[in-house]
Amino acid sequence: MVAEPNRLLHDLVLRRLPNLVDRAEDRGGFLPSHIVRSLDRFGHCGDPTLGFALLRCVCGQAKTVPFRCHVRGLCPTCGGRAMSSGAAHLVDRVLPRVRVRQWVLSLPWPRRYLLARRPDLCAGVRRRVWYELRRWYRDRGLLRGVEDGDTGAVVVVQRFGSALNLNVHFHMLLLDGVFAEDHDGVLRWQALQAPTNDEVQALVDKMSQRVEVWLARQGFGDDEVADEDEDDSSVVLLAASVAGRVAHGQRAGARVRRLRRGHERPFRLPPLCGEARGYNLHAGVVIAANRREGLERLCRYVLRPPLARTRLHQRPDGLLVLSLRRPYSDGTTEFIFSEVELAEKLAALVPPARKNGISYHGVLAPRHGWRRRVVPVPPKEERRERLTKAAKKPGLRWHAWADLLWRVFEVDGLACPCGRRLVLHAVVLPPATLDVLDSLERSGALTYGEPTANAVQARAPPEVA
Image 1 (cartoon, helix red, strand yellow):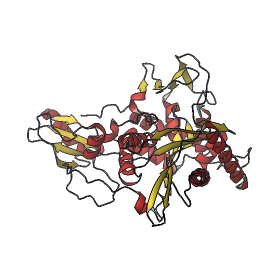
Image 2: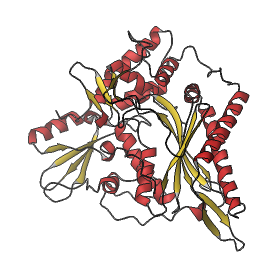
Image 3: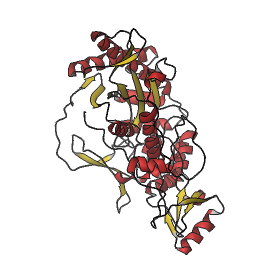
Image 4: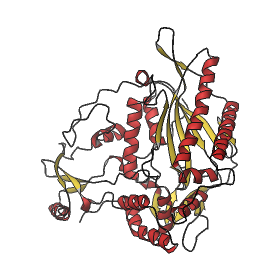
């Protein structure tokens, strides 16, 4: 029987999901159904016994591509595919050929928990942060003699930190200037100068004040927390994840174990970064208008899933080690979890059901009058061979598996080692999957195929252009 390689994370979730449900019931509560459903689907992601596409070549070679879970904000494979497809959509159909600056706003610890529990408050905070940035760009445009100018933004709400902790923050890709109509009605672009450190600090001061005033009006002052359902056991997981602690078991309340291999160094704010009342605003990454490949890498970084498989491995004693891409300032390079502890962290990262994590603002908003004149004309697609003959509708965000493989890695996913092409032979569904897999394994012709984004991992954001 052929098994998918590197199913460590999936098998772990399947083993430990019953433990999470039982512990919630032991406390007299329940684990929300969307979390249980997402974890269960994620655990079965890539299981060929649940169905797969069978590719064949005339030389006799065969490859299976298993069905996927499509769980939002959790699965490395499906999240990686969504990351690559979303980045291609933003670059080809949304972001115009102008300079783009990334603004990143981090929130105080209590507000991370509040916004994770209340998506409506998260949306309200996002709008007020956007209002301040929009006003700043418009005022800068007036200084350059541009009246009635407007900018645009793509705002992504990320819920995770590098240690798999719950960390709600905003990545905002703003057009680094303003559009305005001249006397002839022609829409023109006016680039603006980069902000200074003092201007970033003044912006984060205004943002923090405006957000806190609005939250206080909603009934959430400095000492107020989100309304909690006593039966909803996810509040324990969320609170522990925000604080970097363990939620259940013998180590309940203790900090997540970590390894420090580097030397502690003093923490300093980078350039174009400011702090106020626990809010942190960074504006140091900017992409020039002609660097579309760099812009796509930045979009993939912003849309990345919370965990790359290459960062996780299991020790002989059964504990799991999560490696950091960059050491913390205190020298931390790795975090250590038991299986239950890691399952808790993953459960806390499941996003709310039916809530958008991406929003468009300003001239990029769907109903803005200038949007059609601002967004780029989609490029003509190359006629690449695909697994199906279904025609792609104009404007559809979906990208074929083979197209993404070529776009991201320049790898032909339908190439056979013999030099010919793999073609779709059949879609195999239960209960026939076991018989077909056993037959292919006995014939010796089967190779196991990974879908596009299993290897797709976000890279670091590009350097300042």
